[in-house]
Amino acid sequence: MSWLSDEAISRLQAASALPDFAGTRYRLMERVGSGGMGVVYLAKDAILGRRVALKVLDFPDASGELAARLLREAHILATLEHPGIVPVHDAGTLSDGRVFYAMKFVEGRRFDHLEGQKDTLFDRLRIFQRICDTVAFAHSRGVLHRDLKPGNVMVGSFGEVLVMDWGVAKILNPTPESARELVLDGSTVPANASPTPPLLDTAHGAVLGTVGYMSPEQSRGEIEHLDARSDVFSLGAILQYLLSSLAGSPPRPLSAIARKAMAPDRDGRYASSIALGQDIGSYLDGLPVSAYPENIFRKMERWASRYRLAIILVLTYLMVRALLLLWFRR
Image 1 (cartoon, rainbow, N blue to C red):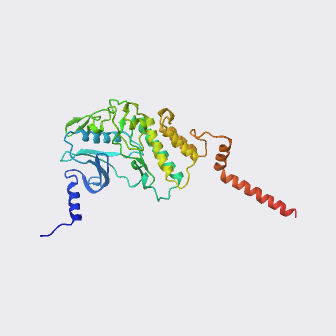
Image 2 (image 1 turned 180 degrees about the vertical axis):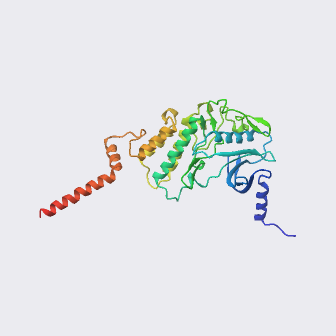
């Protein structure tokens, strides 16, 4: 009798846990990660010959509630057509009842895996600006992300910046269009169907998000008080994470921007992610930022920093001219 090694048993268990995509156009290649209640696989679309990412429920869902949440995420992504949001290509159901959706496969690195990269502070702040732009677009469509964090941002191989994992997103002021029903295997499943009791997002007291990146009102479960400023708090926490990775002390204007975005009181924060992104842009352009009041000395410091090269050239010219005058007067 031959015995299987622990490694061989682990491989067999992993293979047996793979979802069965027989009868679909997709051929699984490998598991690439997980998010929320789903697992993400790299697969090949046999019809179009392209690689896609498939998000599949972890296990069959007899109640249909988790299936409704996954399809709701796919529906939200499908309505948010923006360069900073991964497009959805397809959705369906497997033979064991698990639902899935197919989306663009993004190659790159997570924002929290930038350590060791050669990106400068300028580069990372430009990435942060694009995160703010993407969130602003979602807000303009009445969608809150509610789980913004460095691990949910992907930076593609060609500089693409994508905000990922919209599984706990909240639709503000649902319209008939945003609340329309999704059809799953002939049975009607409301797009805003409630998930399992621990994840209810329609009742006071529910907590969804990630500790350290949730706004105070979100961590208290005050669902009725969530608005764009709740996501602004999370963006401020991402900016604070970015600044904490710097070797020295962060620039004071940037620290002030992060503090304003993360103000405990919503009224003390930026009113929108657009305003937050604009303050970052002002800093990058050497202009004053609203979160950092300046006295005359700070204005001179900022002015000198903005025109450093010109000042050096003028001073060099004056020094050379003075030396020449001294030389000819000898």
